[in-house]
Image 1 (cartoon, rainbow, N blue to C red):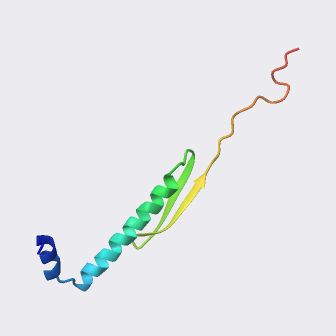
Image 2 (image 1 turned 90 degrees about the vertical axis):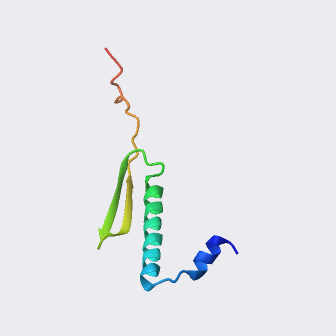
Image 3 (image 1 turned 45 degrees about the horizontal axis):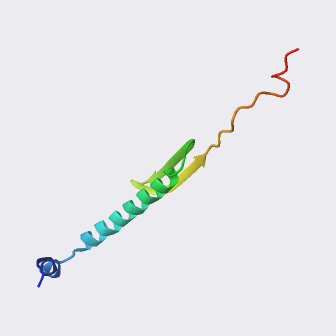
Length: 78
């Protein structure tokens, strides 16, 4: 038998272990959502809403910068 299998088979999980595992999954999910919100963002904001130490909402506001143009007639000199 593999050493790792033997160790896993003998490990007992307490209710705290299961709760910690769920918290780790929630943290990983929150980080994935934050990364997704940041991906490709050039101008804007990412806002996190936290309640009781847990990220419950990720907001992304993107601003699109338009190139500046000269007003009509501004290039004409008379």
